[in-house]
Length: 332
Image (spheres, rainbow, N blue to C red):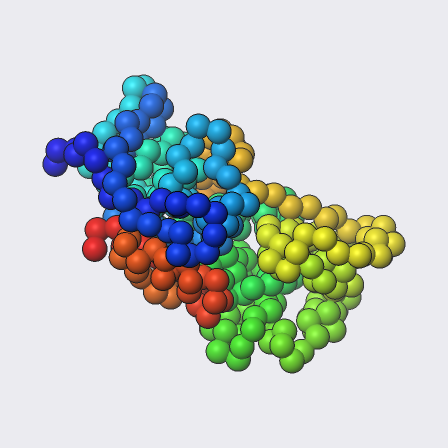
């Protein structure tokens, strides 16, 4: 298949709501040395895409302003020096931007083979989500088998992934979610305890679940949850913040942090080096990909939109009505 000069894509016309996402055409990018060009079949829609659209999460220097952090597709061109990958390979990849398009370039270390048994839609749901879970829960927070994990936003794409990986690796998982339906979905994925935060205190539930509290908390809520998380922790627990949907500022009593010997940390994935992302990808190949290919972990897909309906996909994301991942079918 020949590579066209131009491609369809979605651009952010100005900072704002979902209505600022517009279909347009741009030149097809050329892969630099150490990169591959992927003809995109599907792309994941993630909360950072919405934050970028609002003007609060700019792409790194030199990266396209087209949103989209994870894709699946077929390699159609190799940059200079690329080995180990071939034109025609079916892959999924983490990208720093550009996923909402028919073509995107990706550094070789961030490219992964599509796991056996998965569709291209499902494969595109993996890179950003799995890398975020792995680096935060298992590398930064050092979750071990037989420890307890509390996941806030358990029904999100990140949440549904964290539940499955952690439970399959031997940890006990508790979640918070905003409805009975979402709680039930989390239980079916492997969580042992699900708290509807609208009518139950997760701090009391966490203390009961873990005995003296939970060992690790994965939090994307922030705000008033920051102090509640500290209260919900067992001694020597670790709290990892990956987003602040309720705000990044709070008045917090940090004395329990010291008395319980807690670790409070966090990270973003997009700004990390290609080499660091490649190391995370290697860990996924070793530990998570076998679970996926065995059918023990599988992405939860809530809804798939065609590329030109990216606005509707963002509206759904911001409604928080979804369970699992929201996807774009680029080939539709």
